[in-house]
Length: 215
View 1: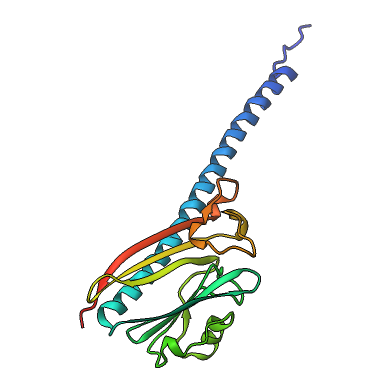
View 2 (view 1 turned 120 degrees about the horizontal axis):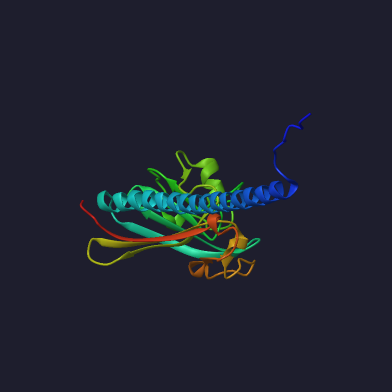
């Protein structure tokens, strides 16, 4: 009577196969996570750049076809953080801005009021200026997206009819920046994204353009 020879995997072979499979799985997981972080970083930067281009295009168009630029402020006030609030009237449109304020909940960064009759000199600049404008002014709208903030906005004359527009925007929560955002923060234009976990949700972008009045 002959015994049928049986074949199969030994315990050692199964352990080796499991170890190899685990290593391959770890490599794949690390690659997927790295790709996801890179994608989110690119998406965050792309969204911020899109907003910056939209804002500069709108303000540049107002300069080109408007009747001059009027400015007021900025003035500083303290709430949880030290913010600067200011106003630009370009042509028929008014822009109210709050440097350093992240757009979320009841906080706002850059409000445009189309065809506004008032001048910047008549606007009271304080902690509630932007919120009140959104609540009461017809057509007023926030130009920044959720999580974004304005670090710098400057419209200056560079000729008889030419104006330079400098804009710096940031996207990300307070703990993602260096220097660390604290209640005493004032040098908003110096903020940079930290090189740490979470940087894929942080971005800073700047745009400079010159617009010439045509009318």
